[in-house]
Length: 384
Image: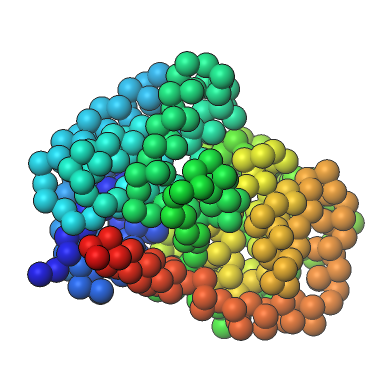
């Protein structure tokens, strides 16, 4: 009899959020390995699936970053109660919980523990640390201490804890040495992201993704203004929107094309023709520990990247010889590097060759298949 896995997430295809794409590939890999897969999500629209999977829609709605902190926390708790009940009264052999939303996933973990169901806890962002970084809570407060204890308890009880960066995995292991922790990167969607046959005629630097509070659009505009002042033949192509996009909407530089939101299906065609990708984030702990999905997608379309700040992601790109890292205040060095690349196309070609050699290992299909093998082995061990 096929093992039954319940996957619980706040977003799923056809949405184009990073979590939706991540979980879709997990579901596909488990189904391909013979698991009986049920995905429970707040995504209302159901997409046709090329693999066998049941998709259940939550009664509750997903918490939103546009909500106040209090309303968001209440939304998470309501969603968590639903997850708790769904797991408590359904039959699963293993459960995968994707966090955030942290409070909702925590209640799902509690239900799994009560029923004795092995569960995988997918840590996409560091909660409750994000609450502390955003000054929503203090770690020394009663609520902060409770959340930290809940976090540690989840790690101890889980069959497997997975996360998207080495830094997060390391910190989880430090907090809970007895937990089984594995790095499961996001990767790029190998059904969507391919190298272009032909690049834009003008040397093009591209940014795409959410323009949230940890992004640094002003750095992009500063570089563009410098290039325009020196009459460099460089164009800056920007895709994305968010609560930090005002300066982009109001800018009037002739060498900046701001497209706003672009449908996920069209992103590859747009970015793959660029010569260089950028991921400019603010110089803080959250950004230093982040590994934005856009960086994997640059690997997928085979273009090198420049990353700020100096970080785990930047070290990864430099170590693999597929890009460069700087701190945001080193804007002149960033500008000089971009100019250097425009004048030395052979260096771009060398970087692209290196990416081509390494890209397959970072596809979502490869990463998800490896996860399924790990989970299956752990489940088999737990039955002995």
